Image 1 (cartoon, helix red, strand yellow):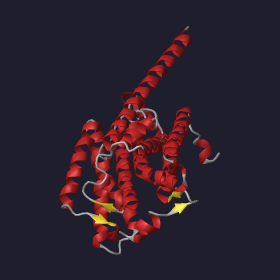
Image 2 (cartoon, one colour; image 1 turned 90 degrees about the vertical axis):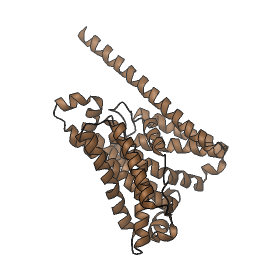
Image 3 (cartoon, helix red, strand yellow; image 1 turned 135 degrees about the vertical axis):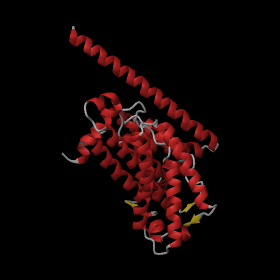
Image 4 (cartoon, helix red, strand yellow; image 1 turned 180 degrees about the horizontal axis):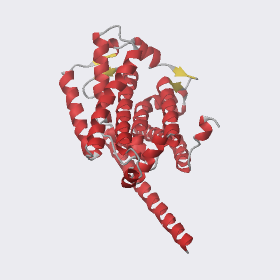
Amino acid sequence: MNLLNKLKPSSREASLGLILLFAIGVTGLINPRFLTGDGTRDLLTSTSVVALLAIGITPVVVMRHIDLSIASTVGLTAWLIADMCAKNPDFTWVQCFIVGPIVGALVGILNGFLVAGLRLPSLVVTLGTLYIVRGLVYVISNSVDYNAQEMPPSLIEDLGQRVFFGLLPFTFLLVIIFMLVVAYFMKYAKSGRDAYAIGSNPPAADLVGIKVFRRTFLAFVFSGAMAGLAAVFYLMRFAQVDSTAFYGQELAVVAACVIGGVSIFGGTGTAVGAVIGALLVQTIQGGLAALGVDAFWKSAINGLLLIIAIYADRVLAVRSEKRLLQQRIRERI
C-alpha cells in the first residue's frame, strides 16, 4: 500500500475539499482571472507560507497547545537571512535553507523549554515570545530593509519563480511534500500517535508512561523550525523584508488550522486538513480582494471564520461524547 492510499482523506477533510471547490468557483465568478493558470499559481504561491506554518503548528495544537510566536519568528528569520545575504555576496539558496530552520528552531527550543519543562501555559509563553522576537527584530534591524538586489538570484529567480507543470509553484510543491510526510508520521509513527493521546487526555497520557515532556518539547522545536523555513518561502515570495515582515499573521495561521479540522481542544486534526484550511482562507481573502473589501474587514472575517470553526469543533465533540456514552450504556444493558 503506497503513501497516498494510506493517507486517504477523512470525511471532515473531504467536506472541506468540497467547500474549497465551492469557494474557488464563487471567487472565479467574481474574478474570472482567478480560475486561469496565473490565478492558480498566485493562489498556491500566496498560500505557501501560511500553509507551511499551519503544518508546523499542527502537532502543537493536536496536543492542546498553541504557538503564537510563529509570525514573529518568520519576520526575525527572514531579516537575518537577508542581512547575511547582503553582507556575504556568495551566500547561496542552500545556506538560506539551512540557516532558516536553525534560527526558527532556537525560538522553538525556548518555547518548548518553558511550556514542556516548566509547564507554563503555551498561550502565555508564546504570546510573550511573540513580543520578545518582534522587539528583537526592531532592535537589530535598525530600520534597515532589504530587497531582491541583496539576495541570491538562485533563491529569488531560480527557485522563487520556478513552476512545475505550468501550475505548481516550487514553494507549494514543498508544502505538499511536508504535508504528506507530517500526515504519515502523525498517523503511523508511535510519537505521532502519542501526540493524539496527549491531546485527548494529558493526565492519562502521563499515567500510561507516554513521554509528554519530550513529545511536547519536540513539537515546539518542529513548529519553530518550520517557521524558520517559512521565512525562506517569504523571501522567495516577496523578495524584500523589513522589520514589519509578516506582522500580525498569527491569526491567519491559527484560523487555517482550526478551519482545517485541527481542534484547539486537542486530540484531532491532520496536516492535510491544515493545508486545505490555508487554501480555503486564502481563497476567501482573494474573493474579498476582488470585491474591493477593506483590509480591516478581511481580518474581521478571518476572526469570524475562526469562531465558527471553534464552535463547530465543540458541537462535534459534544455529539461524539454523547454517542460514546450511549454506546457504553447499551453495552451494559
